[in-house]
Length: 353
Figure 1 (cartoon, helix red, strand yellow):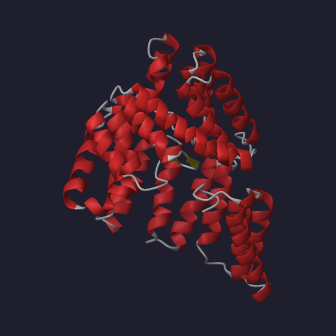
Figure 2 (spheres, helix red, strand yellow; figure 1 turned 90 degrees about the vertical axis):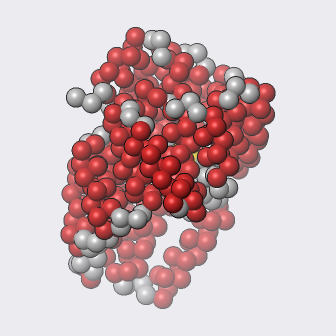
Figure 3 (cartoon, one colour; figure 1 turned 30 degrees about the vertical axis):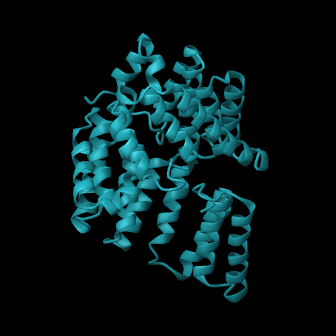
């Protein structure tokens, strides 16, 4: 809850700490305790070195525990060692070959590396085990959107979900909304927005308020007053979080993007740049890459095309960012750069070969 930003508060962190203290008191020397402590150090503090030490101790008594190489893979992925991470996650899969979530992590690692053929194959393996899993079906279709800028498979998959399993829609609403934005379809965007659960407007660990998504949809349908009102509400929510946690990079990034949408140029630049300073790529290869990507968007929306192109060029070289051929070709976030030949060159360089 804390790590993914669903409840990034001291209260939530203290609940985790209390649980950890109880485990250590009850069974201080067990492998399970050391594994749990390693997970805690990773999720709560991004303390990768100490987490790895705990995994090493845990493995002495849990040599066949798949979560140990899996967690090692998470650590290496965050530290930018993507190929090593892939090896470790595959080692975890050898220990637990029918584990659904480990197979998903294999696909996500390939996706971060922009190795789309392997991503698709890994997701096909997931679906061979769980053929009815809606999120995996949507993720498989999502590959074509990112790889080839082809929205048709995702469009068809979501239509099938809507017809056959509408109760599953909240789990795929972010993909549905991005598809609607990419297709410039305000009606579909409104439907996606209506299905969005509370706290559902997010991009990985960056939790935007639902009012942010409401603003995007209002802007898509051309209702600028409604868009600005929604963005203002989003800013109020994020302002409270940033006031309580001034060094929380994800929240600073989110409020920076909202300020850019509102035209608050200086605030947006200060917040977006501060977020990148607090969580550089060297500290988290995944979060850092995402923050660089959003800083490029902030620069684009505030009229600084040169720095937007500079940051976008940086982000496209980073595994873990969402800078893909499909994203750049279709997502309206990049509309301010569309006439720039440098942007066209970046898009062309990512096109499928």
